[in-house]
Amino acid sequence: MGDIFNKETRSQIMRMVKSKGNKSTELKFIEYLKEFKIKGWRRNYKLYGNPDFVFLKLKTAIFIDGCFWHGHNCKNNMPKTNEEYWKNKIEKNKKRDKKVTEHLINKGWKVIRIWECQLKKKNKDQLINMLKDLQ
Ligand SMILES: [Zn+2]
Image (cartoon, rainbow, N blue to C red):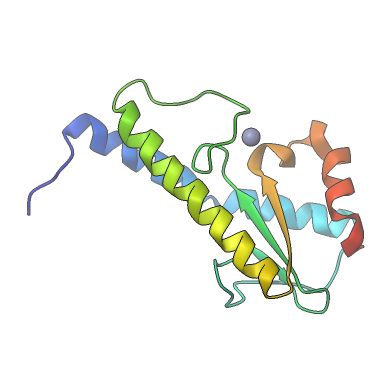
């Protein structure tokens, strides 16, 4: 089967994909939930857009978005090569994120989107503030 990417791009993609399904981000978030004494969350709940965490009683869905994949402007880590490819991919993700958020809100859900970088210790106050309705 032919590969539409050259070798360099392919290995770049593999590196990015690895950082995508980052379990450590979710685990870090769970630690915060425990620390903030937030209960009633579920993981892997089947809902449109596959949120990372769902609070059924509060009808709240939480997405933890990787800064690179979802186009956060916190750091400019765009790969130097194939910039167009990455830009397109990230644009698509952003569009899908928006669609998912709108869809869920229309269905009466509250949607909280948290950037990966907001899980850093120095941003903890900000995070508590975002989650205060869940405590
Ligand atoms: Zn960020």
